[in-house]
Amino acid sequence: MIKTFTILFVLLFATGLIAQENHKDWREGKLTWNDFAKRENSQNVSELIYFLGYNTVKQKYGDTTVFRIEADCYMDKNLSWVNPAYMTEQILRYNQVIFDIVEVYRRRLQFELDRGKSIYEIGDKFNAISVACNNAINEFSSDSNGGQDLNSITFWEQKNSTKLQSLPDSAIPEFKTSRFGYAVHAGLGGGFFTGSLGEHFSPSFNFMYGFDLAYKRSILHFNGTLAGDNVRKDYISDKSWYDGQRTSIAMLDASYGYVLIDNKKIKLSPFVGFGITEFSEAHKDEEERLSMVDNHMVFGVNTDFKINTKIQLTPTPFWGAREKVVTSIRARLYVARPNYYEDLQGYSVNLTIGLCGFGNIIKLK
Image (tube, rainbow, N blue to C red; front, side, top):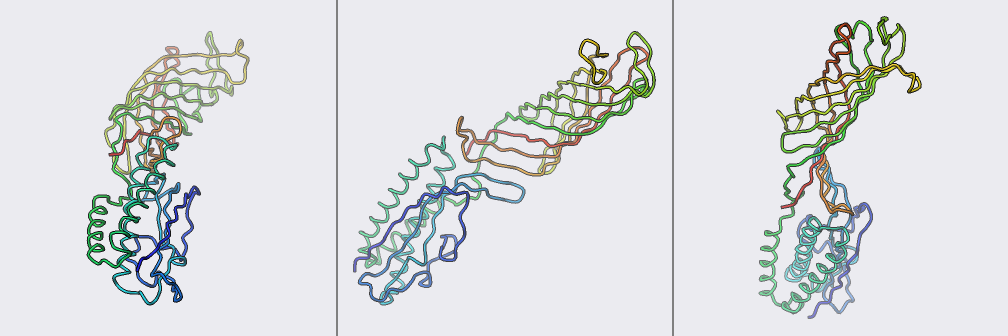
């Protein structure tokens, strides 16, 4: 009573698999004879048809999105069959052992896919795993004499159970986050001036952009702000500004921040540093442009409201890195104190709301 079986390996490069009723995933539970078609005229006992491959997927776990190459296997219930004369518990266990062997190698393939140093290794890893799986099934078929040796079936059941316990089917593999981080952000908002600056210049509309470099809880911020406002009151001096005149404001700053709060929902980091603020007359030639520049301190606080986490388990094509990126809505409150003249100075108070993406390189354990 020698059973023959077919092993089909399919490489799946599409962006996702369409769930079909004739597919049975190993996670759905033990095989039953309802998973097999019936072939009454066959001289053989049964045949389990399965597919083993991999696919690029995007998986959602709450507010976390994982991009990875996922190992996949399933049984094809339409193509798998049994001769009704041999629908015994022993032959069903025999087929289950084959399915368990495939699941063992699917998990091994997943482990290798998650930890590969380059996407160009994928094909070789898959070929090695598929050959090993084929050899294991052939060995089991020979040992059990095609399902006739119950002791062999029991031995392989226990063997597979031990292997499956040592290869947990984790949703997201454990990883270690690098101490170094980086971020880019941009936002829109407004600002106003106090003191004599506020008497002569109206509130501004701001566009702010920048990037961060972080180590543990320390952050270096590098930011730029472009803004526009109007002169609301004449200022007469060696550089005169007149009521209604349109002005442009440019501000560059570098600051040091420290993360005081960092949990699943919010990240709070006050900062202090130095900046340059320039007022200039809008829409004028460079040679004729009226402008004034001042160096000053800047301080404030960033509040990041986290909205999504993305984990990239697929190594990048060029440098093979894996990355964790937290996307947040950033509220940035920053204050400067330009001092252009004794009678033209005051605080510049600004608030912008925008998007921030903060990334860390990750290493799988």
